[in-house]
Image (cartoon, rainbow, N blue to C red; front, side):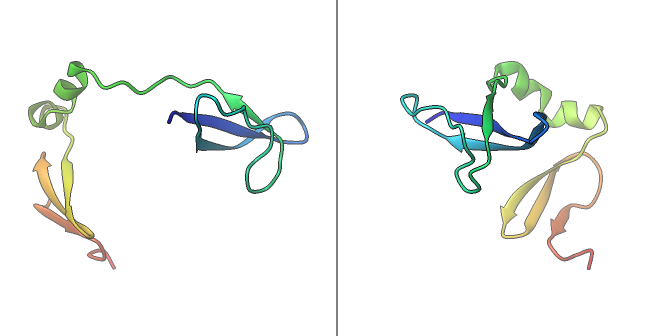
Length: 96
C-alpha cells in the first residue's frame, strides 16, 4: 500500500501538523484527520526511490572521505561503528 502525506488545515488556511497514512489506491482521499476530525489536505511529495548512486553515496569510503561516521544497530540500544571516526560502539544510556 502506498504512503500518502496529509497536512491539517488550520483555521487561517495554513498547513498545520503533517502526517502519513497507508492507504490503498482505491481508498478515497481523506478530508478529516482520522483521530481528531480536523480538516486535512493531501500533499504531493517526491517518491523515495533508491538507485545505485545511493549505494555509492552511502558507502563506507565515501562517508569517511566526507567526514561522516556511520553506526549500525546490532541489538536493543547497541550500535557498532561501520565507518568514520568516533567510538567503536554506542549504547543507549551511556550519556546518562
